[in-house]
Each structure stands twice: as C-alpha cells, then as structure tokens.
Image 1 (tube, helix red, strand yellow):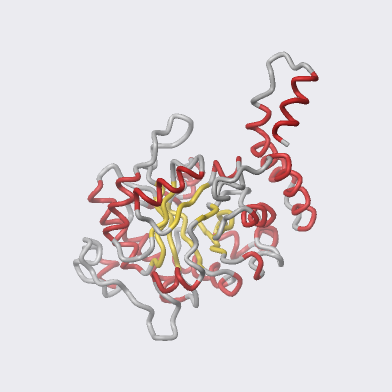
Image 2 (spheres, one colour):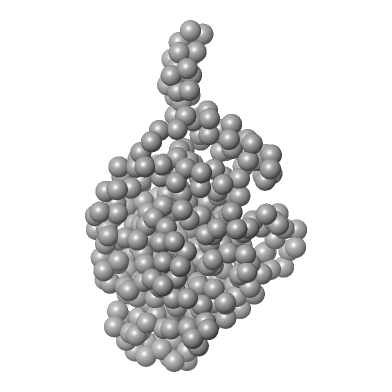
Length: 330
C-alpha cells in the first residue's frame, strides 16, 4: 500500500478490488454512482471529449440526432486556471446552458489542487467534471498527463479524490486499459474508491493507437463493468448503430461513447436512420454562426462529414457522375 493512500485514510484493500466505496462527505454532497446517472436521464449515447472538435456547435448537432450526453474538448487544468483568455476561448458564456446539458467538462491534470481550482470554475455550468486518463499522444507524455499517469496509482487516486471531496458535483474518469487484466481491474476499483462516480473505458492500451490499432477489447470492458458498482461507459469499435446495439448487449455497459465515427456521422446514434451528410454539414454551418468556432475546427468538421461522400467520386471525375453521386446522397 502506498503512503499517500494510507495518509488519506484508505485501507490496504482499497486498490485491491475489495475496498469499500467512498461516499460523499455528508448527505448534502454530490450525487453518487447510479443515482447520479439516473438523475441526468440515464443517457445511453455519448459524444466523446475531442480536442478542438467536441465544441458547442458540434455538440448541438449531435444532440439533434440522438446523442444524450456530451463532453467538452479536453481542457488543460493549469492553463484554464491561470489564463483568462484561454478559459474564455475554451468555455464561453453559451457553454453549459440548459440546452447544452447534460454536459461533462474534461480536464487533463497532474496536480490535485490545480485540478480542483480549475474544476470549481465550471462546476455550476456542467453536470460532472471528468479527468482525462486516456490520451496516448506524445504531447500527453511530454506534459505528464492522460494515459501517462496510469502507472501512478497514488497520483491518480489523489487527483480524483481531491475533486470528490472538494466539488459540489461528481467527478468522473476516462481511462485506457493495461495488457494485464488483473491490473486493469485493480485500476478501475482504485478510481471508484477515490470517488469517481462514472468510469469510461477505452478498451485499448496506451500503445494500441493510430491507423494500425487493433479493436478495443469489449470482453475486458465487460469485466470492468462487473468489477465495479458505478456506471461504466464503453468506448471503442463503434462505426454503425448496429455496433452500438452489439456493444451494449455484449458489455452490459450503461452507455456507449463515440469519437472518430461520430465526427464522420453526427447521426450515428439516430437509431439507424440515415441522415444526409450535406444536410448535416449545412446544419453545422448554421450552428457555427450562432456559436462561433475557430476556422480550423470548422474545416476539420466539414472534411470529416463529407469525407465518406467524397471518397465515392470517380477517379476520372465526369460531371454527370459527380452530380449523380451528390444527388443520391442528398
């Protein structure tokens, strides 16, 4: 048992899968676990936190077509706390309004007190604050956050527990898995014991990323769901609505989260009903006028939205063939 966990009063069993689940410090504390999940409507279809992509206009578009819970893009806790311009750019006055709920705000962090201070700036405009423990990119390694905290159970526990004890709303976490299944289960239970009320699991390891990534391990996600007593959200392997149904059936999770394929098809959660990509692109433009986003965000969204259609264009573009393809999509 590590000294920091003992200092916090968590016994030897807390991170071994046998510890008692922590409760709010008093009956007026933030709602916990399944009670909290049901209080926000027991959402099944979740828009993932995406850097520079799950911004307000895109969240509104996704909600139109079946998404029932959205995450903000990942914010850097220290910058959010210290840099007013960064904070206003990332989380403006329209973010977190009633029509933008339920909403989880995600931060990357590696310092508990800084994380708490940043979270307190948004806690009255969202439903939960999420800790990013899943980012596998080089920038996360350089900054010591995301999945590069996985091995440091002490620090991960402290980050989550600081918010569990100090916020008026729940704290949640999004993780990746270890190759070692037992260690993954221990990790999940440690997060629950620290006070995480929802756990989102991307069923791939930190190294399993990029175009050569192998499928997420739904069987391991199911094991995690069976091992903890809080709601678990499954992330990975979602391309179609049929995948959504299969994932919920195979894992037994409370919800399914999508990132990449939701960018390609914001109507992914629309009960299998196809929606024209051009129509959604136009709707996104309309929403972006109301809720402006940086030009780079807009360009990336439109590229993803139309990429599937554009790939159907013939190698030697004949006007008639192009018109036929566009007409069929419309």
